Length: 188
Ligand SMILES: [Zn+2]
Image (tube, rainbow, N blue to C red; front, side):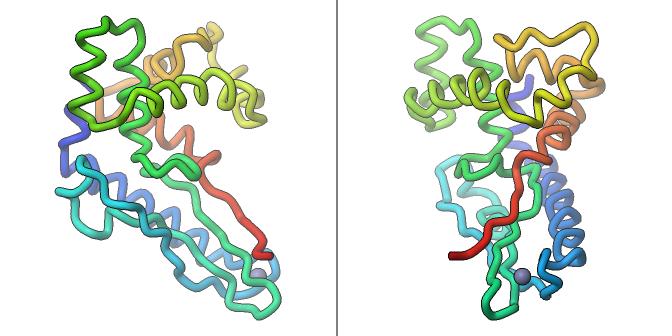
């Protein structure tokens, strides 16, 4: 049921609205040095499944400090992009949910339909199991889930804890993950 979200323009527009708000907040907060932030968007390579979305969906909001000698880059949290991953967060979550316990023929169809290769899907599985579960973010938030989540079933076990329609659950999950998607990087 979550896979229909991938082709849902309203859903993607809603994510973009959330990202704009998060970006506005980050910009107003300014740089840690006190400097003003200028827009310095990260272009994302258009992917076949992203091509039908308007151009503004193809870049990630990011800012660069205007102060000479600082030039820090601030990348606000996002509901569309997970960290440095170039794929949409929704794709990462949907495919990670779908591949769990999937038979070989269905797996082949999934790989074809989303145009993501198997190695990438395997990397995402490793990310949920090894990177996400050992992150300081998850260590400090997992206690809030009672009974405890089965970490071998992430992200399925997580999205099941949110209520509402598929879109509402997905957005709740993406908002939950938002704190780990941004960051401030000092320029060299
Ligand atoms: Zn600065």
